[in-house]
Image (cartoon, rainbow, N blue to C red; front, side, top):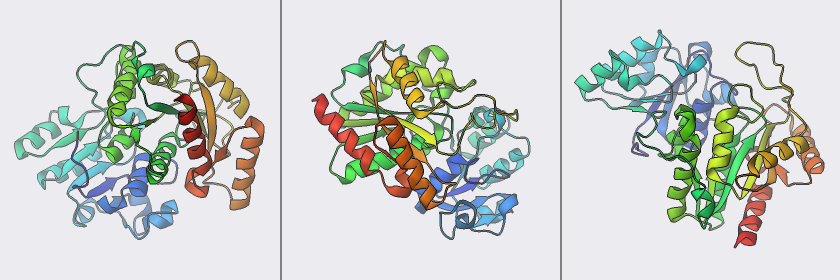
Length: 356
């Protein structure tokens, strides 16, 4: 588990730094801005993070990697996910430079940099730590329903697609619940959440038989000091590539309640690896039914709220989308980043009280 609140990051997001394609970079900037010194991206060099993302203030975007390191970085955080999570050849020189200068490398790639014959060996030689967040624990259980036995109230975010706000929703909800005096824990199941929270398991790198077991283990661990557990979702049950990890999480964490996340303007599963989108996202009430029916044989549960991502809508259109989602589903709805998380927090607290 990495040390928290010590490293200062130059975020590597070259060529993909924007509101939708740099999830790790964006969430790190949103939730730990005090630890970010700048972003390396030649496409937007010379701009501020605020100008690119709409938040993040005056943090600089630089087009020269070594200049970025000179901003006071003590670590490089890989802030984008290239195709297949593999290490692009061009990045090797940048990472070599960082290691030679003694900077840690924090990576969420499927390619484990610590195992790389060149970069891993150089890091060991220089005594530089490489944190491969996606590397799963050596031993994980096969799930057997133990997550359903914890005393804590377990809430799991599920989605219409990838990258619609499942992690963001849980971090916002955790922060709001703590502000209201509740013992709430956010359970990270992906590399970005692990970077923010300091612990978790990137379940998409776990052998399929143990995905549910990883989710179960995380819930049991979190329940040791929490009354409300917020499990980060991954993928979507209707995604043609990533539905397996979604179902493993759903069955492994045995949630008491679900929060359905959706980007209000998205009609199809997003740009599927360069192909034309062809999987149409069903209406929200149908998605609610899909998730509840999938969970039911293992642990009956209900969707208790709708979380919308409205970043690309005007304020008025966003409010209309939230009202429409609430009307269509009969459930509380909000965009927690834009309008606050109170409706979903209230639903969680009501659910937790009813479960006692």
